[in-house]
Image (cartoon, rainbow, N blue to C red; front, side, top):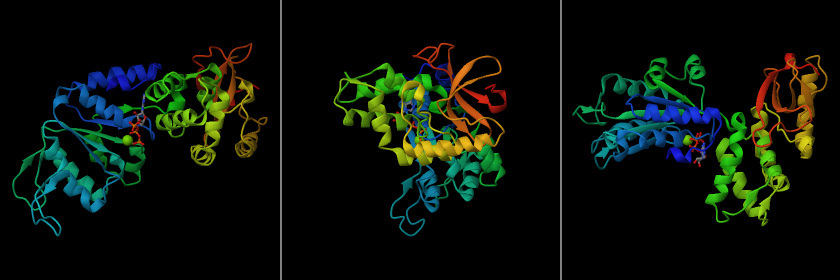
Length: 353
Ligand SMILES: Nc1ncnc2c1ncn2[C@@H]1O[C@H](COP(=O)(O)OP(=O)(O)OP(=O)(O)O)[C@@H](O)[C@H]1O
Ligand SMILES: [Mg+2]
């Protein structure tokens, strides 16, 4: 399972090592990361690399189950416990037994349910709804995941702090794909290998074009994009033109998602990529906002120099916090090393020109 978690970036290597170390324990793990970044894959890897791997791995998606049903899903119910309870039903805790219970999207669990879950985690005991027998939950290992910032949820009163500490014994953070852009080519290649056309290749221009995209939907978006490229083009070697075509098909969702994340999409003239007209208008709008900071107009694709003397190309503008998403380039131009362009964040005030 860990083999499926691809990427040789230092942060992914460290994450894999941490997963192996943590998997061997019974500690609760909270997996944090944006949409489509691999949280579920990590939960499965934690189970597969533990002594529990022959025992059940049971998932409850807390966002997908209506709030009034979560309790019965977790703890089960006795026959006749409520209208519609025609049979005794085992809950997820009981199904997990000596295995692993994965509470996915735990940040979406209603407050009333959080209190009940907390009680079970504190005491190790619970009953089926309508039942009297005390059941033990202490042999179950609980993993949870969320794409929400749970500290913010706690501060806003939407998530219980005591539950947060119970679940978050060991945090595992999965970075967004754009923060490990060097992993993009190998993940894309793996998607192709799994497809019905495993011999298709991505040339260097295609790899660069993919690395320039900000992927608000992370690895899942990359998988979909590759699938779309394979459908749209019958070439054996795919280029940046194929990437661009496949990206254009998703301009609207990508645009809205990207702008919500307040990061401009980095398609730049430096590698000969056109910026779509709609995107260009948005980026110019962002650039105008940047000009309000008293600087020259900044736009994606523009070469800038950091106060340390390093140069880079703007791949995105984070308007909210005055940060630039920058691809480092060498003095002679793009790129320093085509296989691993380094993506860094520079503070606006550190930019010389
Ligand atoms: N590092 C990776 N290498 C290869 N494939 C990956 C990697 N991370 C995620 N994937 C793949 O990307 C897809 C999304 O992963 P997953 O469902 O684990 O993400 P998630 O964080 O749980 O997403 P969501 O927040 O939407 O629930 C899956 O098909 C998964 O196999
Ligand atoms: Mg998930």
